Image (cartoon, rainbow, N blue to C red; front, top):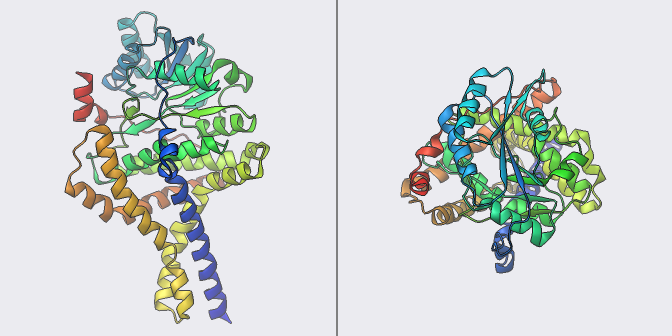
Length: 424
């Protein structure tokens, strides 16, 4: 009797994980399904005269001057004629306030917004800065973001051509050779912004990215800005706007991506993913996704927002299920089914190798043989790290710990050869 129960549990777990990983793989490859789909992911040529004004908020906390100054310099250098920049800082962070004031002295017209909220986090700084914005469109760039010079001109074109309420641009982590895990981290961003977010926009449910995202100021004011209590304020905003039927356009071009750096340590990566996962769980429990107009969109939202939970679940039970199936005395069919989740994983590994080659071509990077070797060899370790972060997020959620764990910026992306060449 016990053996039958264990066998049934293994089969259910294996089939669930197989379905979950298979769906994620299919959605991650959305951009490459057909030539038409692939071409439809790119920015439109900027043929119209810019007709919108932009307010760009740069939330900064515990930042060093070289990193923040490089970000501001790229924004000031935009070819778009009407851009204002608002540096959002906290009153309890005097060192960053001082850095912001030094930078503002170099760029007349740059605004500094000081958030006096008792609880400090990114969405509260954004909401405080929103009151200082005067542009038609409000954009958000992280403190270590390097924007392409012609980005806003192309974003303006997308707003005009598509009559969009929101435009999501692409972000790419760039320092792929900094560490063994930075390579996989960069590739995750490549799949997410190059492909999967386009699928979400097409399905009319999109968890927005918190960087290089542009929203009409009137729309932001209508929904009262960002949720100041949410650790994934970008995802939450995307869910609420999707539920209201607002039009979101996603666009990609390797020459127009915003370039950033990976977390510098494994623990920093775990803290970052813990915060993201915890934010997704918050958004799931808030329930705004239930207001989406179609059942298909609601199912996609629920699946996406449950991903931290499913990742935590798989990280805990998959090794146990595989080990039990191998050492236990189960039928051949149960043993074979237990290995089904490995099939999408193996397929994904092949796509990872192909994507790394495409990544190198898109950004003119020389991808070495050892980079491919690291990609393959460290895949299981990286998945364990992500599972650890998911378990950590679930534990923090149920224990009521919603502390904002900030990711430090060290400027690793500034020393990447392609960045230096581009800046020159």
